Length: 604
Image (cartoon, rainbow, N blue to C red; front, side, top):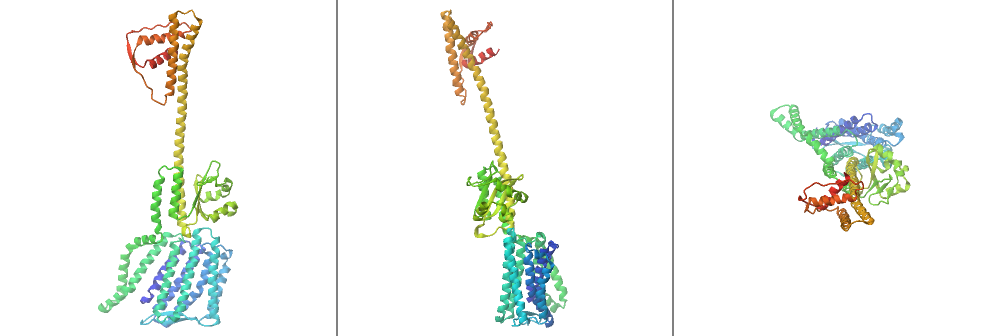
């Protein structure tokens, strides 16, 4: 082995880890099998490079070059197979076995016809005892030209299938995955072709080797990114562990080539100790030392590929704390809209709330209404999914054309329903993001969780408002009852002086009274009128505190007035007597005490 083979060994380590992770994630899935096979093609590429770079025999290097040549011309066939299956198969032909037989039959036939005259050369590495490198050579032969044409056609075919598939894909995640696969694969292929075209002008073998090394690393980064960032496959923990171990062992290999190999050879020369034993011991020591770094590497991977998650979770926690407090409907929804705009970089958000008629009105413009009949057509879809959905995920034919045109005109991409107990309380319509970036699958998940929190806060506030209204209603009813009781009491209070006035007036009208008696009755009428006036004043002053006017009054005088008032209305000739010491005096409000005692007397 030599230092030149290190990048290929590192690429091999990472690629084979990725291939097994993808396959073991779901061995029965067609896309898992094809994608794993696709990555394994690059593993074969790495192995052939390792063989070429590390052998001292020309025949072995040539054998490695022939493997590489086959890989290069079979790679487009795998790309087409992936194009038909990734991220989901959309063509019926993708499930037919004969399609794949025909797909690989043409390039295999041309490879058989070309054997053994493959257009790939072997160059010995300068200043190295062992190791070769390869280069593709171009000749104007018909068979070779046909191979190139088929390769280019296959690449165009696969790219076209993926590009035409994008509008048919239902989720943003699938679209983003497909965009990245097309772009990344084309860039890698173009880069590889440019390397081999410009190699004719490179005088140094090392320059070509360096450019190929960059290409190998680009392939690794490409696969790692599409797996970790887009979460193409579900085995996230296995994926993190696999890549972590790949990084660890890649580091060990690097140290081996740079330090261990040189150190073991030096010790062997000086102390005549077997270099293999020394190398094995140092590698085991490295493994034991690096093992504790596993958790740190996994955390580092999370920071690199999901760097915005921690930041978002912090802001989401702050919003959650604010939503625990009571907020008016407008305050709550305004806060939520601002949060989505700031954290998801959404240009515009339209919020439609449900009203009493089961229509949905725009929070900013109540005249802008989504009819309940329209909602009924799409309600089942939202209730069955209960998540943030993209506009094209449900049957657009069910939407009223005018409303659909409005959504497209406003560039609405996401519809977020607020659902509680199988009832859609509101709709949030999210337009495209700023800078025309796409929503990721992570963001759709975050929006769904956010919707649940909004619904909980919204209903909690609604319950609080309902309780407040109920308390206010109870208070109003209690107030009405109190007013009724008070009115009855006032009616009772008014009736007594009115009776006294009426009887006194009737007695005076009959005549035959002495002057003193007549004057006494007139005095009673005046007193009772004054009492009525005071009652009305007190009634009008109910909102204020009752003012009690204390004064000293004789008990005998007070009772004499009460007895006289009773006798005037005494229709049954009941004899009334009062036994008390007239000298007793009380400090009281004579008007209020008179009213109380008179009521007691009449009630008795």
